[in-house]
Image 1 (cartoon, rainbow, N blue to C red):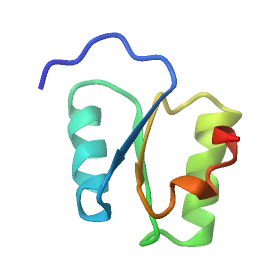
Image 2: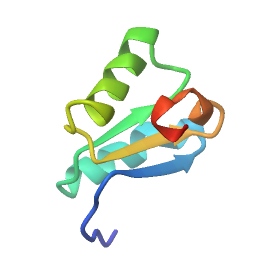
Image 3: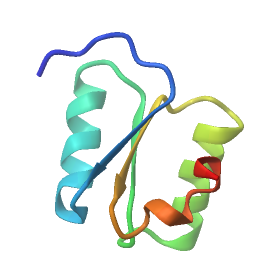
Image 4: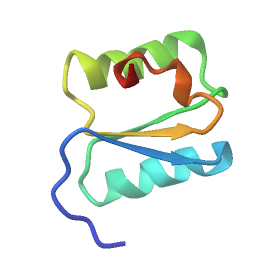
Length: 74
């Protein structure tokens, strides 16, 4: 995988791939988080907070089914 500069990015994929893609990005030095229905409400809220408020997450890897739940998209 070739990684370039990243500034607040969303990546959509199937739920099964979300964790793998987020881990691959983290392995490449990018602050990335998975966001999918397999996470608890608290975990999803924490991902949102790290991305929206704290800026500790540059890439959020969303499953297609949960992408509408992320308020920063609106």
